[in-house]
Image 1 (tube, rainbow over the protein chains, first blue to last red):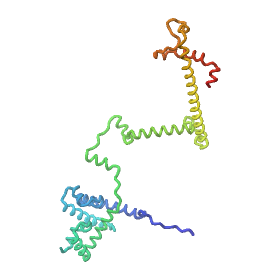
Image 2 (spheres, chains in turn yellow, blue; image 1 turned 45 degrees about the vertical axis):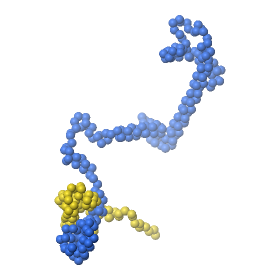
Image 3 (spheres, each protein chain N blue to C red; image 1 turned 120 degrees about the vertical axis):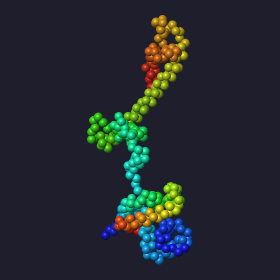
Image 4 (tube, rainbow over the protein chains, first blue to last red; image 1 turned 60 degrees about the horizontal axis):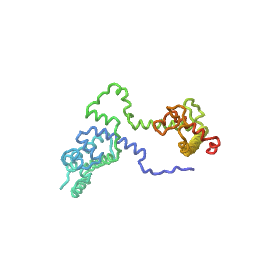
Length: 89
Length: 222
């Protein structure tokens, strides 16, 4: 009887890709609920991948403010996602 | 430094990003491992950061750039006259597209010519591969025959011309009295370049050619 060979794909499985897309949409909605200052700090750090120094140059604010905004933004975002029933692993 | 929950919450991102000094990193980790509330907070934020790093970059909507320009530079000026009528052509109103379209038209024309497709009377038989092959074969043979004939003719012309050149010195030696009937006009060819285009030039050459190229001479050339 022929057997179907299972092979591991180098990329993501379709279900994983779909859940990531769904997570991305929920993140977009959650980011929309953040205040603009916190939102731009979090986007620059976690979505654009800039480091603290680069964010400081972009936003033209002191380093302490950058750290504070990123930290508050992340905690607030995690809280909003939890309220939406989303818990990213 | 003794870490408490407020300290951990205030510097959580620095801890996760490795921005703390080694001593602070260790102190923070020690507090987190012993505090359920902080452990849960760290897990939640760490999961969020990991998820944000994992998701694909968002695709930019098509209308985003025009919308930003409209908000920053103000609304676009309305087009009037023929610009308003042909405004929808603006995206393809570019030399690149014009060249592309011209190339496609030329290619289709050449291909259809080679494949023997009659656009005035299109038939289904034109699309038959056998007919296409025959048409291409016929066109290729015709082109070859035309080229062969052209070069053959060229050879004959050169032969005649060289004959003419070899005879010309003899003609020049003859006295001019043998030539025209009319006193004013010379019938034969003159060396003046302005006379080269006149009808007399052709006629003179023709008569001379006829005298030089007897049927026997022609046979020898051909």
